[in-house]
Length: 106
Image (cartoon, rainbow, N blue to C red):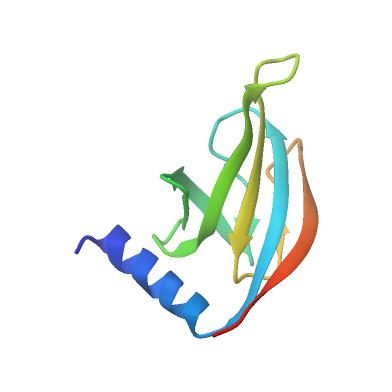
């Protein structure tokens, strides 16, 4: 299994064990990747295939895109992040909205 596959497996295992999944809506202008944004203080380095990866290659959570290259500028992006983290910081020129959390039960 690849490193990405192992990270996903570990993340999903955590969800199966129970806990809380926090959700945030992140909105920004610019690059498709929310560079400068962070989850629990760990900077977002990459987003691909629904997975959010931190600067130290850690899995910070998962995302779905609500808007890509939108808005009047053609550079507006909106994604919903699902994470076990408790705080999401938006990139410069961005905003974050805390959405209702989802309780995960075994």
